[in-house]
Amino acid sequence: MSASAEGTDPVLTGYRQSIDNIDAAMIHILAERFRITQAVGAYKAEKALPASDPGREERQIARLRKLAEDARLDPEFSEKFLRFIIEEVIRHHNQAKAAQ
Image (cartoon, rainbow, N blue to C red):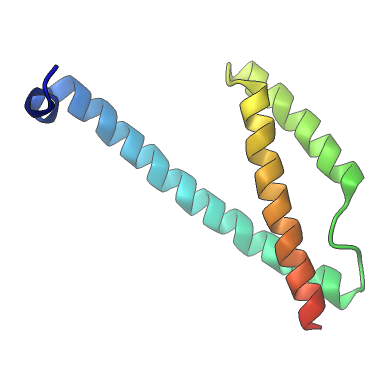
């Protein structure tokens, strides 16, 4: 299909609009998640708690891998995605601790 045909293909356009809507929802969900984890980081810093909790992190990864499998999403991908998020959260928590 040519580039000009792609722009006028209503089926492809519909798929892309759905993808765009999902991407926007994911950004809003991630923003809310990080607002909450920043509050957790501030709380941990205030209470002198460690920035990371390896036991919880591993439990979360196992739980979300199972959810991914149930949803027919590649569990390896979901784990990589979650580990990236966890690394960012820990980085933010360490920043909050350093700011105390």
